[in-house]
Length: 310
Image (cartoon, rainbow, N blue to C red):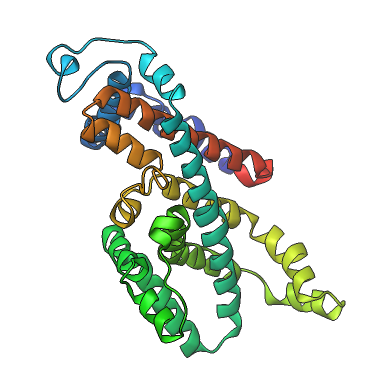
């Protein structure tokens, strides 16, 4: 009875009553106010202002610079009516799928699986090289790949040494060239994510499957993938969102050209907003890019089983 009385005191006594006191809860939340205020000013503020700009004719020069006015959905309808916008949208999807969803994820998974079986020094050396590419700033990585693939770059020197003809992928296949560069730079993130996930697997599960006659591919597809599916979907989501916003790498390597052959949505948005001075139109394109990222995130969350979301 004494224990019951004590429990009752803890759940309904003065201490619990005070926890439900709105005034006491408000006082406890006071230390968080500066952080909340900073988030509203530096995160929510620019987002709200960007949404406002997307519905105006704000410009750096011309009529929109003198008198900014609301134009409704005009910026969005203008974008959807332009072939350059849809070209940028298509190139963005190609670049994201080829370099982020396929390239970085498959290569990262392959490296993570290989590093589980190799010697410690090989794992250390490979990890150092791959992560070294990841920590290089985006602009520097773009310059390195430009000097490697350009007409008088390192790759053509190697081709000359083997007696092969010169290549000019920055001109003939620019979206492929920038996709390779993004795979090279971003694979480390996927490798680290999958290495961490694989390290949590119980080796006895795979050993039991091997004893039962399951081959490497069957064990990977039927055991490894289901057990690390949350890590796979999380990595796919993060690499997709990161690749959608890649700007500096492409800008340094091709500038979106030749013509518009490698002009993804971030470069198209930059051109419209700052080269042509149409801030309202450029911000509308940015919101469309944000919407694409949101749709991708919802798609990944939809694929995950409900038990993985809890």
